[in-house]
Length: 404
View 1 (tube, one colour):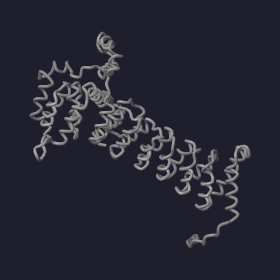
View 2 (view 1 turned 120 degrees about the vertical axis):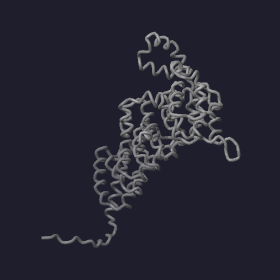
View 3 (view 1 turned 135 degrees about the vertical axis):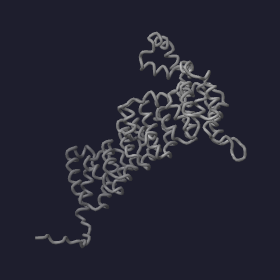
View 4 (view 1 turned 180 degrees about the vertical axis):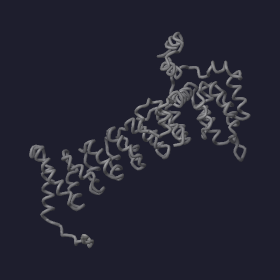
């Protein structure tokens, strides 16, 4: 026997119950009493009763309770979480005005409420790292923008890495990230590759630091490593980053060119893949790093390459010509892009340019272990914690090159 069709006609709205409204207000008053008037168990019991009533209450009734509880320094957890998961209009008084919400309450709201809730959480004062990490996970533009603008929020390393990765699709986050004190060189150097010209200049000005203190600290270690025949791969990679000399003398001995300058001179007639690899080796770079530099559309890495290796400024023009890029504008003036690259060359010191170049080479090639290559291909950014800082930089930088 078939069941009768349900009655779809909405029942008329029942008039507001004065008893219910009064009881909700009284229960909220009890929850609001100071600890000298009500103990923790009485407060929790009252909170449970209030939660049960609020589940069936109208939105305006729940809103009145939320406003009543917002100034409190102690609210039962079950009551807090119910209201924080409620409509944004109900949750807003707590998210905006309640200073006593715990990190656990906020994370629960982040995970089970809406983007509007997360936006309000991101604007709260004194957010801790666990909360900002949870907020960043969703990569929601309105939430990330609020986080970056919130100077009183502390961004965790994982949150920064998540937002750095998000800047590939949302470059508008880059200026906000560059303002953050939590941003590290590894993050900035990865973001450099997809940042615009203004952001690139800021990255080079802020993060292209000298390695002088490292060179002083490790000055005697080079002799020790040489005595051992450079057998330890870990120390060899680190010392390659620290050492002052940029050009590769061993590569020059095997090269058909008598100098790096001669190789760049030939490249002015057309930069082939083989010639690009040769210039990379002579510059102390792996071919993957060289390829990233030569194919970069902005051109600033060419200035870094030339300055770091001691090449004269005119060699930028040779490489520019070899890449078949326009050197002059319609009016015969120097092309704006080339002029910007030449300005970068003048702006940065040799040692600082070497720091940038060494970091790129370190993170883009030396860090490419089989596990990392697999993660890049599969887009497994959830496994970031398993990799070192340069490995994570390589993952962020190269993921697009591997077809993501």
